[in-house]
Image: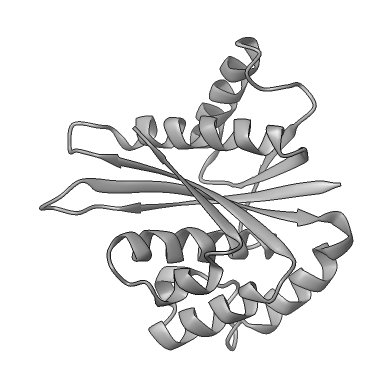
Length: 187
């Protein structure tokens, strides 16, 4: 059984298009515990989780090298947008495409990093709308959870972080994951 773990990243660029991206890291159920243990072993000190933006460049590289050796693959949706586009619109575009791609890939369970009750509800409304159009099957189960409670969300955070940094010209981390990650640019 395949499960996807989803996290997002927003990079505001004052002199260029901003980037909104969502990454899904897809994991077979037989590998969950081993991957969780590896990710937890990468935490430093009392840090409750790994978070891309809080890690040094050296740590980002070390985390990426470990991810590259794990039995995971990723899908990242990217939406470049101007200042007139609201963040929630960019999120909806990325999440809808990502859910459809995951459904087509045979993923049965999706866990999205929780933002807040109200924001998670906006995602749920999107999910219900996409299901009504029959673009998304009813076989895929979606829920939300804090990244403090689920280490596999850290992998999605690292993949989306490496991708957005790659788009900004910092390629080293993404290049390690390139064979495992498919990037879909939305227009």
